[in-house]
Length: 96
Image (tube, rainbow, N blue to C red; front, side, top):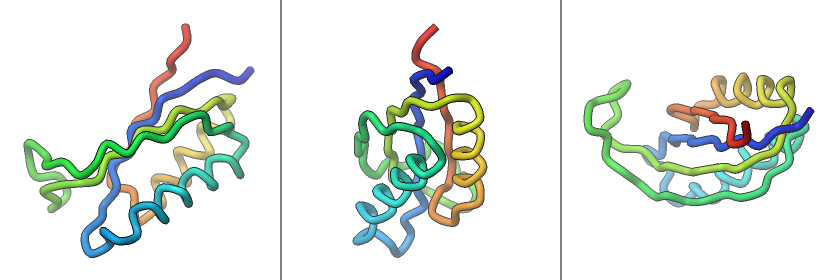
């Protein structure tokens, strides 16, 4: 059964500021290839971390709204964990 999820993804853009749109669209394509349906992408912009995180002081935040089943979501999360561009990811279920 497909459910709606919100995914907050923090990108490591050190030296890659001009390619943020490319990275965001690549992540969206990867999600669709794994069986998720993209509903919305919100660019939240670059923000500073309140604490040092893996030697980073800031990251580019992107919010994705997707519809996926559990298996597809697990594949998406695994693929994002392996990506060099993704610093951190969190997915939350929107519907009860």
